[in-house]
Amino acid sequence: QYKIPADVKKPRYVRVNTLKLDVETAVSELSKDNMVEKDDMIPDLLVLPPATDLHNHPLVTNGSVFMQGKASSMVAVALGPKPGWEVIDACAAPGNKTVHLAAVMKGEGKIIACELNKDRVKRLEHTTNLAGATNVEVLHENFLNLNPEDELYSKVRAILLDPSCSGSGTVADRLDYLLPSHSHTSSDGDGGDVGRLLKLAAFQEKALIHALSFPGVERVVYSTCSIHQIENEDVIKSVLPFAAFLGFHLATPFPQWARRGLPVVEGSQHLLRTDPVEDKEGFFIALFTRNATRSPESP
Ligand code: SAM
Image (cartoon, rainbow, N blue to C red):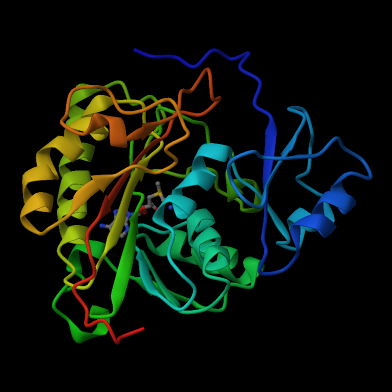
């Protein structure tokens, strides 16, 4: 079983919530007490020294910046919804990526943020309020129960699917410090039990097939904070024929990023992995795209 060494020192990443604050102001505020650099890949992401404690910093507590790792911050950027689009965040709580999507969309358009767990819905609402993300509609529902043929979802152009996973690639250091309870996935973080991984993968596969089934959707991102092939490449491998049937293909998020998928599936060079030791967090991102099926005159 894979163990992340305890001495892996993560830089402290913060994402500027551009719905509330511009990057230059954030840099100048944070630079008063810290060394601050801009990340070379993710717009609006700042890098501070590992030990920096920002939990009580006013910019954090008022939602102007979010403490969010680099790999986690790649996900909404990989999906790349345009301002004005309609988007579903399928498994949304606690909402880090939901509010990042809202910032990428400049607060314009609509994000349907779907979450199954009632308590986590509250956390999602807290996050969206804190971020000032007014284009988010929180939906307490099982994503698998949303009907892709429903007129309600006919304008949805992008779906972010970040389902429950083993959490084996990371620790719970997201927004969770703002709230009383600390578990951020359904996992206990070990991720080592194959039976449990297969159970998670069965849901992940079903949810990905469901996301690909929305008729107007052009972009789907599937992401996990797991290092396990069962939850990552194997899920992609099993949905590829269905995806291809619907006109989707794998696209390459962040082509400049060297670490790609394990070579166990056709198109693994398009998949993105981050390494829990080298990159301090183990994440997986797959991006499916297809050409728009809507008429050219629609927005
Ligand atoms: N994207 C979130 C973020 O960045 O803050 C983290 C999502 S977490 C890994 C997965 C979430 O999916 C959990 O809150 C879990 O309760 C929710 N979930 C699990 N099954 C679901 C389903 N069938 N429909 C909707 N949400 C579900």
